[in-house]
Image 1 (cartoon, one colour):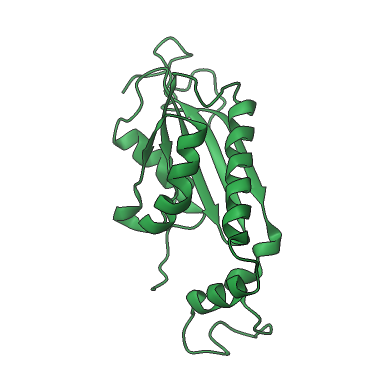
Image 2 (cartoon, one colour; image 1 turned 135 degrees about the vertical axis):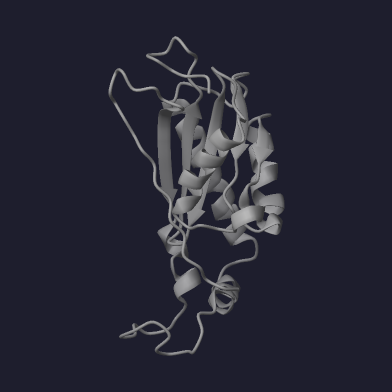
Amino acid sequence: MAYGDAGTAVLLSTEPDARPRLWLHAIATVAAPQLEAMTRGDDPAAPAPRWLRGAVDVRTTKKAFLRTLPRNRYAEIERAKLTEVITTALADAGLTGDDPRLARVILPRFHADSLDSGYRPLVAELTPAETVDFGRDTGHLGAGDLAAGLADLLDQHLLAPGEYALVLSAGVGFSWSCAVVSRPVPTERGGDPT
């Protein structure tokens, strides 16, 4: 595994004359701090990166940490937190998973195995909305997954005016986030269908 840098940015506005491309209706984040050591491992604090080893090896720390948990415990925690973050964001946006306006779920930019074993089955239980994976092109962007998901949602023209999407993100520490966005209809304070 090679680490890389990623950068993303989002421009937000509350100006009444702005021509929004997406409306942000809700965003929720949940955490499972008991999983934090999964990527840190048992190494003592060091004065600099790679002080103890010549390379960063998150697979070794992850495997060692998972051996300390009861079988399937990580999957149970992840499932509970994903359910919580998605249902909280939907409720905060005044939606349910079966709302016909909910058209897409943008998945975090993870390896296909992680998406297929955990994310896709759970999302399918919570909503019939189509799942979309943009990670094949970029890989995981850390905290940038959510912003990049919004950009790709727009660039690919995946929402018609009035349709909603969930944009999921997750990261070490451990945390999961879900944003609920919609494409404005032209009458919504200058909403532009392009």
